[in-house]
Picture (cartoon, rainbow, N blue to C red):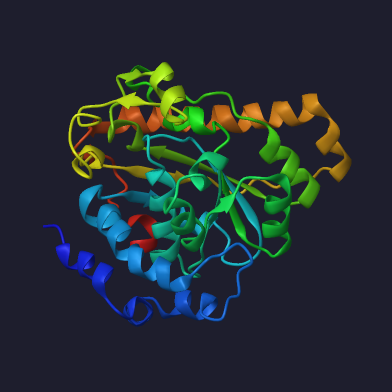
Length: 304
């Protein structure tokens, strides 16, 4: 049964205190953090229970391999992107906050458009996201952060339903970044996001007129009033975190376009192969998987 009590924290006067009682390690790590990109622990603590509700009770996310994300030091997390709204990143962040032995934040690089939306831009910064740029990414890694990158870009979240779980060609910039900063890459495969908002048509002309990166037609949007048009379907999710890839090559290889593109394609294909395997083993969209791992939904290996 869904634990709706999570939602009461949206009105709390001391959300950090509430989060600290349940997750002292996370709060201790970031309580005195003067983040140059605008992260605000109070804002994160206020909204964390809502996304934890989605993770544990609504999507019942099955997280695998959370231990493959390092508890200390820098890393680049790379995965398939989906779902119209970037809930895939939010679900991974919730897993890292709540189910890792050394809870940490993930700093996602976000396209400029989201920072142009009044109100949303402040919320994005205060919950930990950063405007996508090479200099910002390099600075995050210099300070030993986890950086989340979706190399499909905005195309990934806006893909039509007929192309669900077909990984679009990865932009190779994340490989260049990894080589230049000598940072491991952690591939992530996510099943579930492509079906929470089935996107049947993308009205590109309308998108240009209203200044959006895409204008989807779903079961509920734009037909239902806000916020009903943004309520996702209760699809079961699985997130599989691969082992880190250490690129043991000199920094100079970052300038070799063919070499960099080859590595990006290899990682893209490994994620696609993993997605295909996960989809083959899935019983149904709403009931999830039937395998021999006996992993509790919403906890995965970290919850054993």
